[in-house]
Image 1 (tube, rainbow, N blue to C red):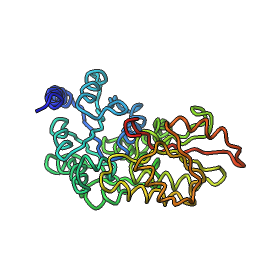
Image 2 (image 1 turned 180 degrees about the vertical axis):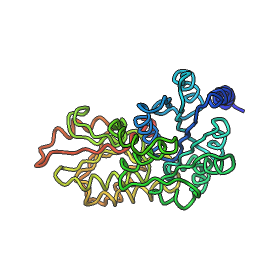
Image 3 (image 1 turned 180 degrees about the horizontal axis):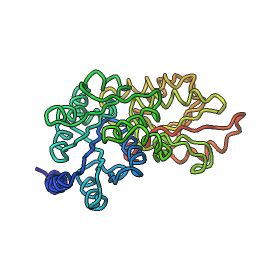
Image 4 (image 1 turned 90 degrees about the horizontal axis):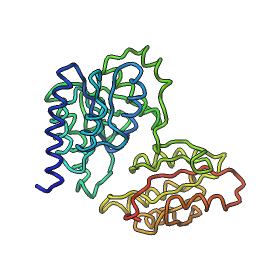
Length: 331
């Protein structure tokens, strides 16, 4: 066992003790997992519940043993009644191990996509890993909530309370509402508190101040499904010059070129100007998919798009979609 694994096991033992204490005093545990949408559903559930119940929640991207331990230490108070956590995984059995430690009363599957495919090794392994929480709930009891708008989830999960929607924001809010229902919050209370929903930072966030122009900031994370949804949405905004800024998607293994060509083809007719970040197999795949049918520029760093867009004389105001951001080591 390497030092990192040993460290995680030490944290997990401490977390397990604290979870037992929390549940003894009547606390309920919500665990959220999936390839995408975890943080958004978690944050929206917190927005909905924070004026109704004493609720604690993991920070933005705290989905490892260390992050969960920090949350329990700093955020769980004697009066806390609900603890909402997201958990991530890069291999089969990790989510099941988290479930054994966290003992969820409510488990949530937000979606399954070919994200981190090179780490998981296969699409089948991703499906197995992301549905482990359903297996845990089935064996140990509790409530399973799942995204019925995701076809892969629908095919591979049974006995769930389904939430659905037409677009990403509606789907995520629906998931938050379903968590509230599972915690016993009335429909009236849910309706009253929908006004507290906020935009989740860097997750399809509409902003006109941060970058000096109208931007849809979807830079925090991305996967094949959400990427295609974002392209579709941008394509509908015909009153603007539609600009897309992207480095592509990482960790797709042997299907990377095929997926990036598909993403490029999806941009035709929906994107007016494409700005690719870096020159690598991902951006080359997108260019092959585009096939010269979308005007394309290259930049080296994400924020370089601001100076480039401001230098253009456009007939229509630009609307920029930043889809995904990756560490510089990938550029």
